[in-house]
Image (tube, rainbow, N blue to C red; front, side, top):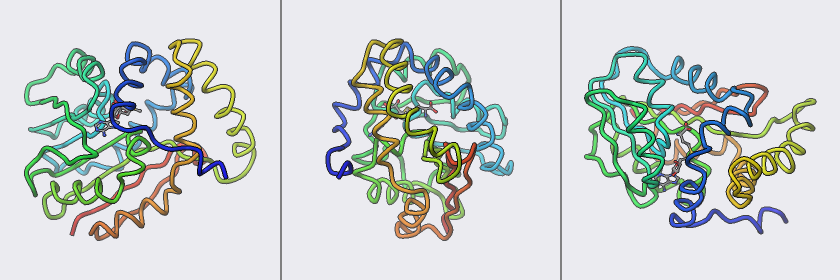
Length: 237
Ligand SMILES: C[S@@+](CC[C@H](N)C(=O)[O-])C[C@H]1O[C@@H](n2cnc3c(N)ncnc32)[C@H](O)[C@@H]1O
C-alpha cells in the first residue's frame, strides 16, 4: 500500500528540506495555494483568540507568518516562535520586528523548550505533517506547556473528502505541486515530500482523537476551502 512506502524524514532531513527552500517558501506558498494560505491563517486566528490571551508559542514557526497573524490581533505581551531550521527563523526575525517576541531554534519532536503551564495559546500552521511520527509525544508536550484553560490551534493542509475538489486535488498533489515547487525552488525532493506528507497525513478527526488522548478536554475541526485546509482546536481543562 502507498501508506507503507512513505515515511517522514528524521529531523535532520526535515531541516535540510526547509533550509533548501527557505528563499522560495513564502512565494511558493502563495503560488501553490492561490494565496489562500493567508486567508486560512487569518480565519484560524479569528477562531482561535478571544482577546484574553497574553502569551503565545508558535511551533514550526517557519518565516513567522502564523505568529505575525496572531500578533496583528494585538493582545499578546509575550510571544515565542520555535523552529528547527535556522534559515527560516532568520527570515522570521527579519520580518517580525516587535518587542517581546523571542525566536528559538529547537526540535520540538524531542520536547518543547518551555516551562510547564506557562503559555495561554500554542499554535502551529502546516507543521504537524513533519511531526507525523511523533504526534502523541508532541501533543503531550503541548498539553504540558499550556496553562489550565489554555488553547492549542493547529492549521494543517488536508484532503478534500468529496465532490469535484476531491478529484482535482489528486492531480494537483501528484503533478502541479511537485512540478511547480521543483521548477521554482529547484528542489524536487522538497516539494515531493510536501505533497506526499499531505497525501499520507492522518484524517483531522483522528488528530482530534489523539489530542483528547493527550488529555485535552475538547478538540474540534473546522474545514476550509472544501477540506484543503483544516483548523483543529483543543482546550486544556
Ligand atoms: C510548512 S512550514 C510552516 C511554517 C509556518 N508555520 C507557516 O505558517 O508558513 C513547517 C515548519 O516546521 C518546521 N519544523 C518541522 N519539524 C520541526 C521540528 N521537529 N521542530 C521544530 N520545527 C519543525 C520546519 O522547519 C518548517 O519551518
